[in-house]
Image (cartoon, rainbow, N blue to C red; front, side, top):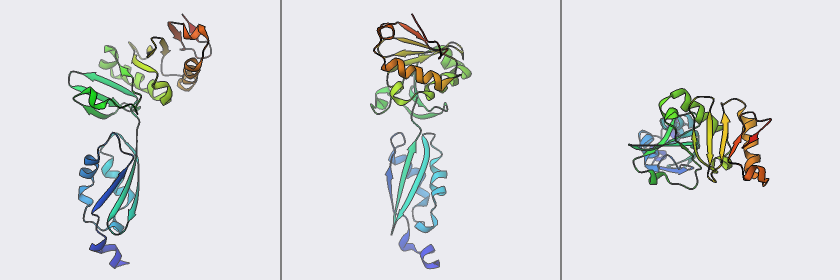
Length: 213
């Protein structure tokens, strides 16, 4: 056992990466660089997860050793739920309000695999509590619903408004009753009822009694 544990023949030389989209392969290699040369039996999943936790995009990490010198690393990332574009570029945020990727050029983050509405109101960008409320709302939505959104805004924590890509406005209200509101929004998006498809504004702030205008 001691021979295997310390054997230089089992030193880590290669990392095979799966599941990484927001975190680049080069960044993973950089974070794990100090593990190269260490015997595989001495490298645990916690060692890898601790190093990769420096990236907010990383949610879970799984590892598998392949003798003699390869470590397979599978990353599960937090999905981006919001995008903010400013003078310095564009940033993607997780449902926890953390920046999980940024770029100087907005087109660099133009990825069809992510449904990311823009947070557009100045109040949401300038007030931390309002911003957190908007991000929390977006985090409540299933990816299929976020894919139908163009932008999200709010003037206060209780006035979150969603703009659909088809031009309709959804008055969400506050972050309370999020799951119930998300169900109503999904039903609205799937409905072919003209009262909903032709409405300019749909108020679901009280999910039990949505109102169209």
